[in-house]
Length: 167
Image 1 (cartoon, rainbow, N blue to C red):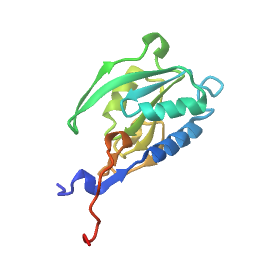
Image 2: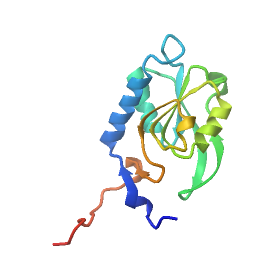
Image 3: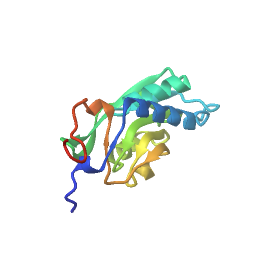
Image 4: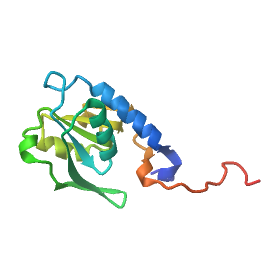
């Protein structure tokens, strides 16, 4: 077991970076939908997938956006995934033509649950860790499994001591 704390191998993502990476995700998905290259709808996995999904929807001009709320963490410890709120069932069907967007795939448990509900949907994340990569169809940046990603919606600006010395 490592004595390293999550922040010691952290990947800090700014609002600018998540915006750039989400736009890159949209560009990668452009023309890949099953309906002449378009997507019928985008479903964001809350909460982390909401900002990337909004950016992807804007870039791809997709006007139908819904959410699925999945709880898989309790105070930074992973638990069994459960759906708290599902998207419109009629719109979803088996997922054909639906683009499901999340910020990160870590272990893959959340996407595994959502994929079981909508097997024909396309799953896209901005960031992916190795354990979760098999659950994702498209992603932008891979990070190591032991890296903790700090998203801008989880952070606040504050003073930080210099790395070397205090003079």
